[in-house]
Length: 147
Image 1 (cartoon, rainbow, N blue to C red):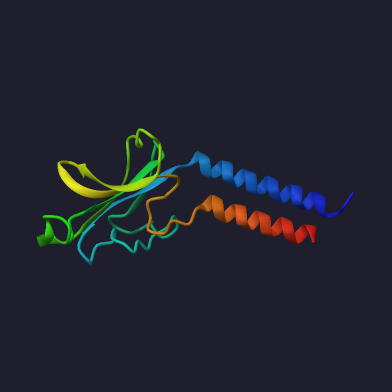
Image 2 (image 1 turned 30 degrees about the vertical axis):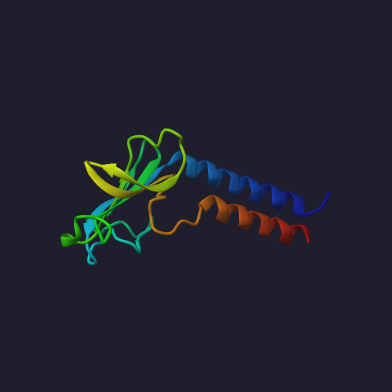
């Protein structure tokens, strides 16, 4: 038996358990700000470790696992006077087709641009999937062990 097999097996077991742990905890960023000085606007600079201690931005548990980001106002809307508002939130339920997407829609009787996503803290600005990063690192590590 090759000496690399047990190490590969243990590594794959650890990666699999990380994926399971990610599936158990689903959180969303919640915040709202308007204009250039707000902490909720893009680019959104918070992550799971930097959100603690910042007023107005929280990472809250989300039972539905569906997060959202709403852009309200700005140059294409009527509310130009106050600048664009950005809101990040946990949705009570996801879209009826369970598809992640961004689209113009009506929210609280206002036309907004809204994005739906499913996953832990997925409503941040950057959209690099944790699962993709784990997959790539697993494949790279396995390739190095096999060589």
